[in-house]
Image 1 (tube, rainbow, N blue to C red):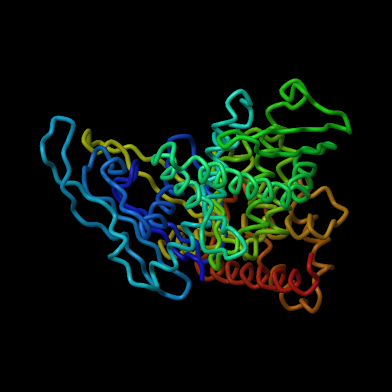
Image 2 (tube, helix red, strand yellow):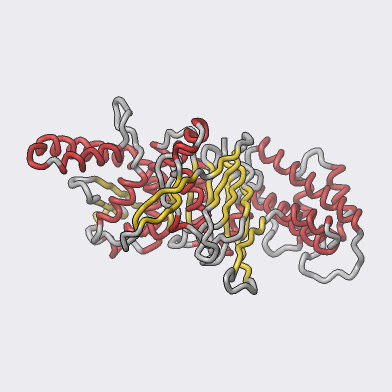
Length: 471
């Protein structure tokens, strides 16, 4: 079961209601800084966490509307889960009693609670700012807090696997409150927790180093251990040489790759949840462009099928590259757009623009804008054909060649598609003209509708070829 749609309203910057269609797929979100990318993934995490604890919602309310937060998700099996809330009395800084709204874990059905808790326990938001805490190794406590108390929090302690790591840490704090009489128990529990954490690091070491080497392109070997609760110790070898001053040898990109590899290796090895989601918020900022494609390869190979993945980015070139590289049958793409209003009390709204050109083509056709419909049909045709040429490694300069030249090579690679190819040739004036050139010839609704239909058929044909030949 996956998430099909997300609706939010009055949450942080989202005063207006917006609906995100995931269709059960993985999702890539592009938006400029301040457009709400991080808020979207935070909204998801909030509804997950709301099934296990009461969370004060006043800090999440939109500052202009001052209305209750609304978050809902629809799953692929047709169930809709609404954020459950209830009022609570508390005292403000001045000692006055006020009423606030908090999340209500008891408001969910057993099935809803089970689903949300599974995602809450297995999902953390991985952001660039979090990943780069490894960059300042003078404060190892920060990275300990992030990784041990966040990512590893719900690791089940063997052999009974009844308690989580975070529960063990909470019990330790309770023992410490008892004072000197619990010294022996405190020491034993500290040793037990350290042993478990070190076992985790030992078990993920191989995968961690594999990912790090892929994402850096270097011969790097990393070890991590804990000798004292609250601090992590790192040892790094580069080309077999011990690196004592890590910052001298590892630049920002390599440190970003090192920490991202650590998180991914933990998820790969220890996430046993029946419902799995990966939230990656601008995590490639420190990676060189040539090292970003290997990250997509890791996600496709080890996470794409089992996890539902959401990636955000403010880098439009990277967004467009992902659209070309990732399989459209498994990934959705959208843009967040901030639109100004004339209302001082409501200065902007956030809009969602899905990057499905065929959907746009149909919308424009329905609204009578025939030229725009033709343009988007043509853009989708170009995207499909160029992507096919790239995946099949057809010998043509598909980035600079005319689309007609690429199509002439591609159509010979399509098996049992004579009728489809013939229909595409019929609509050459729509599909095989350079997409940005002015074309004064009239476009007719029925002609463009048939062109959209034939592009859809081509898309299904190529997706079928991919599944059959696994390319």
